[in-house]
Image (cartoon, rainbow, N blue to C red; front, side):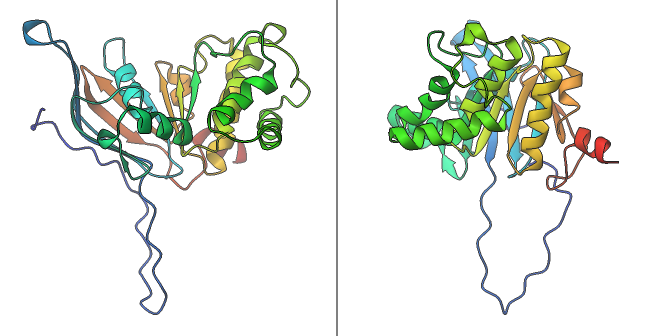
Length: 270
């Protein structure tokens, strides 16, 4: 663990209002994610690769964070840890108040299914299943009964503008429509965190704009989003941009308060 690495608790722009002692106090919910001095090392000895070198990062509820970095910066490793697809070699990670490092594989899979919605560059849809069936999958894994699965999947597809494509298979949809199905699948479990890995990397500019508009509207509704991207245009939609280099955070800039609208929606409103 690199004890000299600076802590990065995340900027806080709006101080809390004074407490009224006459009113009962409701405990504030924990941040969605808190990483403390996280390290990740692959291999041992002289051939060891230090992918993360003491990363500390906090994201509050409703934040919209873009994580950027060149190839080899550690952003993919960080995404895997945030998404509970991998575990750190050192440091701590709390997701929605849960100490991820204390979980076994079974409980880690449960947390991943319930608390994280994934959107991948390559869509990861099952080819011979309809859009509706693809979106229902996480609910099926979670044991939700059929009628409720269908209701929630239809609502998620409607939210991304695909109410008229629910019975189409992936090969009957454009790339942008397939990614919207993937977004609906990520949303259907009502996750604490929406985690997107290069979500526009396989799309043309028009489809990319459509997907980012969906993310902006989700952010405006209070969702917490973390995007992994190398595209400045994509990062410009986020309320906060974190840059990695050689496994460390080298820049962390907030452009919009956590509780405010995402910057591109704010531009449209003005």
